[in-house]
Length: 196
Image 1 (cartoon, rainbow, N blue to C red):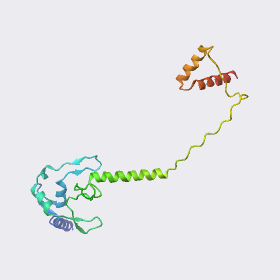
Image 2: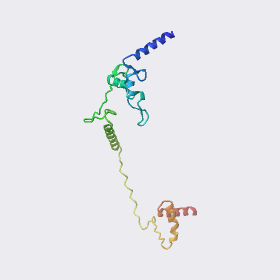
Image 3: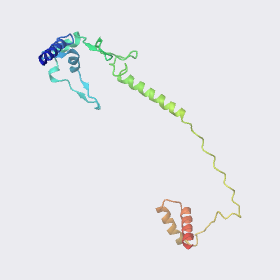
Image 4: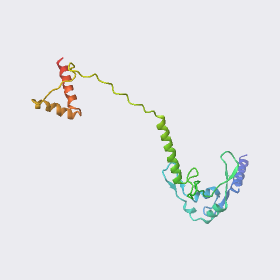
């Protein structure tokens, strides 16, 4: 029973390896899928890396058989949906913008045109966001009650006769990064709180 299953597996593997998608690679002495041979002949970007590429394997560099496989074979590749064979496109595509012959990098565009399109779409998104954000006008400042002579909210103190008295509050105001007027108010408040 075990021998039968093993024989069936070997026959299946033999059928796959002798199929039209595979060939005997002279350099690696293996049966290799044509699609893999074509991929091994070019640099491949390593996933997760930033502009890191896997180098072409040394045994594949300058391989005439590989170039022949690449030129002649359009290997059949399984379609993701499930099983139908389709021709693999090995031709280099050029940018879809008129007059541009640069190779395609993404979405049918070369690097330069792709970056332009990306930046244009980014600017449109930013513009759309700006339009969605409503800029509310600032509230008008509340009008203060006019100060009359009867009002005692303003006290003018002249330190001309006592300049030494003002030195200490000025120094502390600079240390605390506050105007001298606020420093004097603080000292008055603190003095009143201590006296009660």
